[in-house]
Image (cartoon, rainbow, N blue to C red; front, top):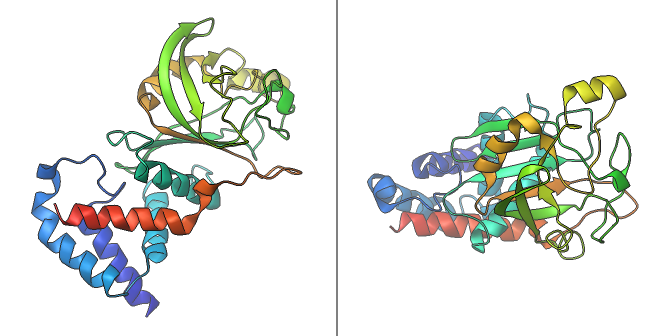
Length: 273
């Protein structure tokens, strides 16, 4: 039975060309698949052949495998959390329908490791995998404390949407809006932004054993700053994660059932174009 479920799920995903369920696709890009896609959704979803959560899980696994995220050391469970939040935000129109991109930071990894991944969900490929700093108030080698409070100089966990750019003391910078109440909603007021910094480099790690630290910003290597900001600006999603205690991150955006429902609803809507 499980084999039959996943065969049906894979067929739907392939037919709809779903790296990101086709949000933002123009009608002409999907019209040739409409009849088959609609029939597949009707048969596999509404008939109960596969549940929404099974389809959603299969979709996440296929992107993870296609983008070779395991080889790039991105933990599957962290990616699943990131994609769960992504589809919440996408379904609620909080992020762009044109750029199917997510930035993921895993603060469970030390700052000496590459712990930022920027993934194109449509093309199923990694665009950037690089170093990223945490706030000086969060810890040394490892980020262990997080805050939503001004002047804490700590990083803030949760889901963000990228905002506008500006030129500041670090050059081109990208404002972020935090969407997780209690975790990062003060990010804009705290001037938590993406910017480049000389202390975010492999040479700094080689000399010190860890990266330099920011005032809470996810600072990136100077040589990649412009390309990264150009890629992720314009209302794309960013997810900063850690399972650090004593206060573990939790969020309504991590509700898999709701995300799966939005996922299936969108694919059904696409099938009726």
